[in-house]
Length: 142
Image 1 (cartoon, rainbow, N blue to C red):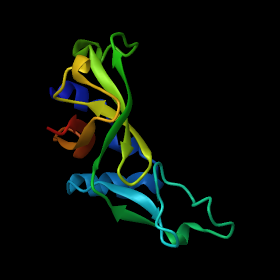
Image 2: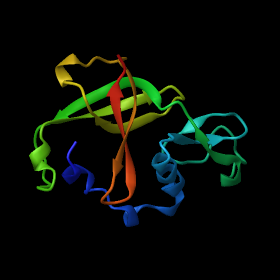
Image 3: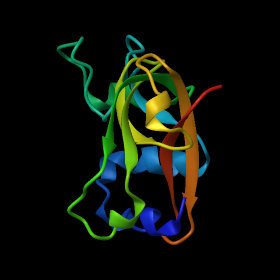
Image 4: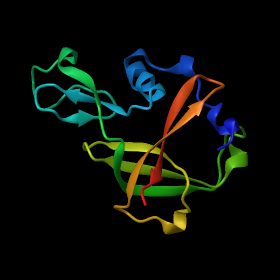
């Protein structure tokens, strides 16, 4: 993947609450927010709706498998942003993570005509030298 795509992610635009997710990616760790009471994982970060008195102090960033299955996908053929127009077409996927949440991402290394709902996928860390970040892209599992 060319660094031109990767340059579109700007680190100083991140919400402080989600910084632990991005910091873990730099270590090639896929973490989700997890309720310490019931163990339910969430993306994006949230409070656990299963407990009326739940607070952020009962949520933690938990190491996960980084694996899941394709829930849905779409092939992007046109974009408004000229900075990424050169990389068309590309595949956006919704991944149903093994831990439960649906995670939106980009699929790499596979043609869209080979995809199917339920196909196993795993995170493919893409280190971006220009920004110092790591992107959580996904690839199919053979």
